[in-house]
Amino acid sequence: MIFCFLCVMNKILVSGGCGYIGAHTIVNLIENGFEVISADNNSRSKENILEAVEKITGKIIKNYKVDLCIYDDVVAIFQENRDIAGIIHFAAFKSVGESVKKPLLYFENNLNSLINILKCAEEFSIPNFVFSSSCTVYGNPDAIPVTEQTPMKPAESAYGATKQMGEQIVQEAMNCSSNRAILLRYFNPVGAHPSALIGEIPLGKPENLVPAITQTAIGKLPLMQVWGNDYDTRDGSCVRDYIHVCDIAHAHILALNYLLQNKNQSNCDVFNLGTGNGITVLEIINEFEKTSGQKLNYKIGPRRPGDVIAIYANNDKAKNLLGWQPKFNLQQMMATAWKWELKLKEDEEMFKSQNSGLK
Ligand code: WQD
Image 1 (spheres, rainbow, N blue to C red):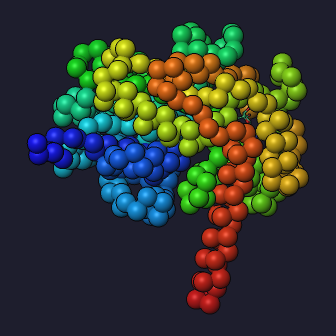
Image 2: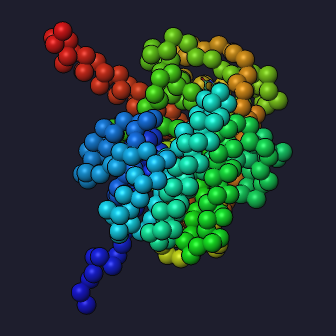
């Protein structure tokens, strides 16, 4: 029997492949034998992260630097790659705080890019689709932990609304096609690859908690603010379910294989990706200080509009059906985040010293 490599189609298109979760997922895809291409216009990312992916995996990743809101440009990717077996769609703006201030930007970008990708999946018969969703679809839940059956409350931000609508768009698209999808609801992705070669690179002042912590600790920011300590939680600060980005990345491989092996129970399955542990803002700051040995300069500020008070996951479904098991604990999340921040500083200092003589 001649083994036909062509008939084992394993090329995956990763939209937003230069992003934080996208890049970590590409590493995991390659380590699991997939071929990968990326589509990312680098409006919120840097293409050179794929050089770091190459250092980790030894593979050069082609990135199509296109705006996924321009349909013809998306079509061109699929016309050039007729052997795509699946799509993982990360590309979206994702700051809760920013989306409250610029809702139309979020609806335009996050929904148009999704619709274009889905239209191509249909037109080019790409059977497997994994959608990057979010725990923000639950809004402020009445009961926690949330399961995948927990009813969605009104989204607390335009970002959350784009994920609620995005899930519905994917479901409706699957209902009138033979394609199948999985919706992955990330809780709070944090940390960095253990190599410290890839991690989160906020553009400008960080909105998210952990990069705000590490940038304050390393001196990039003079001070950080805890947005409210008067909530009805055990220490007054908001509760979240922090999950290591490498655990999130691996869940995508399990989700793809679940589809490729036709194990899906419907044409659009949904899974929570969280550890199942609710941690407050003040508790994660404390864990960071213990892990890094750095005292954090912070003060209590006002509540942030759009914030959910408390949410964490029931992750039984992903464990039982995908075989997913988060491996990184909170200490490792903080340690890898800090190691990444230290590496960024080291690289910046090396760049400055190499270029100091050029003035
Ligand atoms: C967490 C907590 C802030 C910064 C994120 C992603 C979103 C989605 C859900 C995946 C909140 C507090 C923050 C700071 C603070 N994930 N905070 N000071 O809002 O839960 O949303 O997870 O799709 O994409 O953005 O995360 O890190 O912004 O905030 O006190 O300087 O930390 O108020 O309570 P959030 P976050």
